[in-house]
Length: 298
Image (cartoon, rainbow, N blue to C red; front, side, top):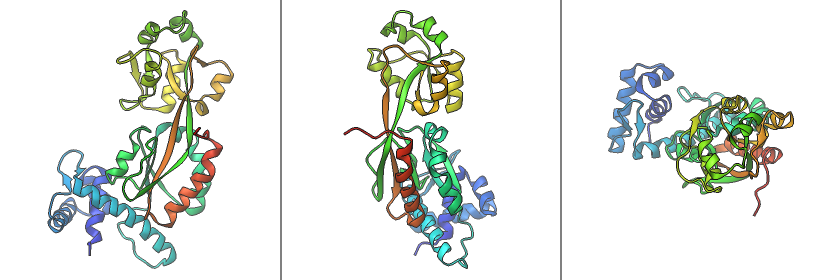
């Protein structure tokens, strides 16, 4: 049998990004947590963490973290059935990787009532929709929302719908940069706004219009800040239609001439053995997401 106190130590160090913060979370000394990790490594026959800053799980560590994530969910279910059980050291928050645009638009209204009713606390890890599943593979989260369809071994994926992205800019920016088009040459020179280094939406839009490779752009890792840069006339960018309905209606933002929307499918990935709580959250998303997301065309 696995000593789950050792797994809890691994979870704490991995999720907090280091031994000191992991020890603070558990209310233990850093030395005690380090000893638990060493004992775990002795029992499984190899290192479970790299001793860097931050500490990163090894392949063996990721397998153990995936198991620990599922155990944490199952123990929460058991505690609800048998309140006298002691879960000392097990965090109560459900750790989920989610893309910033969903977090800024439809996620809260879709899950808010459910979380209040079930007393569910969330630990949301913001990742681009193209790479969120990586956090789940690394054992860092119990579920994720991303654009990847294929589930991990031991997990399921559920298509929730698609987010519709529009290429937009302020009227002044369009007049200044796109007086003749926009042409490929103008698109290559006009500054764009990109959410982060993993954001490929602007790249896809430009490639479809004959502008491959590098282009001028700002980096802005904030959904709200992204829109503010566009409103200030600093660039153009791909934004969820859900997020900018008011700005489009009052003319503060306009679609680029001749542009087409990009549809990004969103899949909910969750562990098969994630327990009742994760299954209920999945059902909540299946019911509520279609109210906000477009149906994906076959």
